[in-house]
Amino acid sequence: MLKITKSAPNRLDLELQGKITTEDMQEILDEFVSASKEIEHGKILYIIYGLDFPSIDAIMVKLSRLPELFRLLKRFDRMAILTNKTWLQKIAEFEGFLIPGLEIKAFNLDEKAEAEAWLAVQ
Image 1 (cartoon, rainbow, N blue to C red):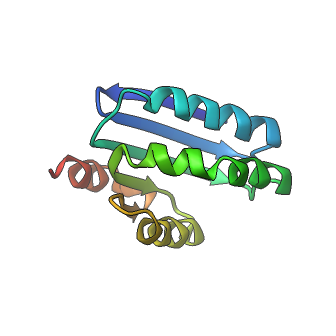
Image 2: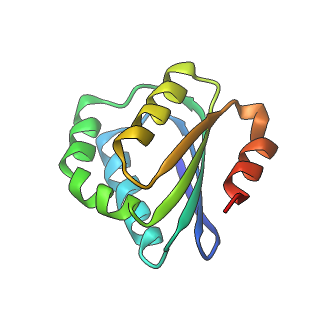
């Protein structure tokens, strides 16, 4: 399950939980593309509660859309990831090094106030 909310003109809040199928991945990416269209210098709060590793087909869907996703991510300056999965925190912060102009910082689920404060920094 993924929920995307545009909580401010330049901010998206994403909540993810459970297993991601191929259909879920397609739907998630379509919704993200749509919600990101008018955003400039945006921020993302991404909360991952419990995530099973996506299916190989779901990963292939994401990989097939990487050029589009990289273009969209240029609209964002900061992304805070909230999760208690250490491997997701490490991957998220590593992705921050791969995407120019996007700063990604991982937080534990109980550090939402800290993540919000970090996102608020200009």
